[in-house]
Length: 117
Image (cartoon, rainbow, N blue to C red):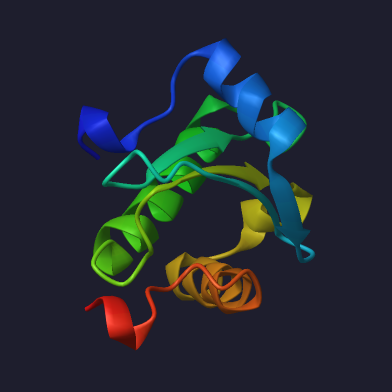
């Protein structure tokens, strides 16, 4: 992921947590905050130590980033997203992670509408 797509600072995370809306399923929680002044979307990832060791956590983050990379043209801009992984993700493969995230993308109306394209 390029730097312009990432949320790294704690204050940015806290802003999204406090002012954003959340949607969830068993594997992920996604907080999203509208930022109309931004052209692109940005994502922040949070994978707790409770989920597994560093190798497991980094693998999960790579899988999430890959899903966003593949769908970046379909995801609406002008928003910030924070994705929090839950315990069941540790045992999931790429396609399971992808389908779980796509479920939340549809549930949270994160895809661009056809009019904007």
